Image (cartoon, rainbow, N blue to C red):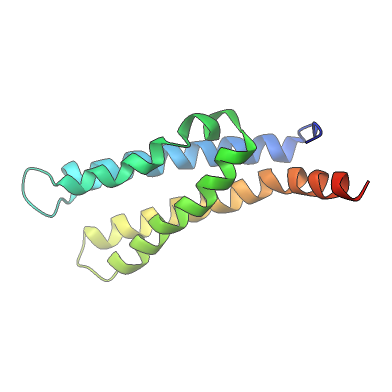
Length: 126
């Protein structure tokens, strides 16, 4: 793949994606551990954040493949939030926050990755 110089929009999108990924990871763990666990004292559901650690380094560095993989993975967390939004507060508000962070990551990652996809497509045509 040819190197694509990063625009200011892309750099901002990568930073927003990395920040929202970290915030979503933190929320996921704290939700089930401290904020609103299924059982008092914490829940093993805090481990649902483990898959988010796999692409973490690549997301923070702005690597294309981990970022693409993370865009698929984040949809699972958005889906979980969309189901749990019907629970009573505080779970409802945590679910809304989870969906918002997931969607912010998704949009920022797509904005960041689009020039890479266009460059790859142009390279295949040449």
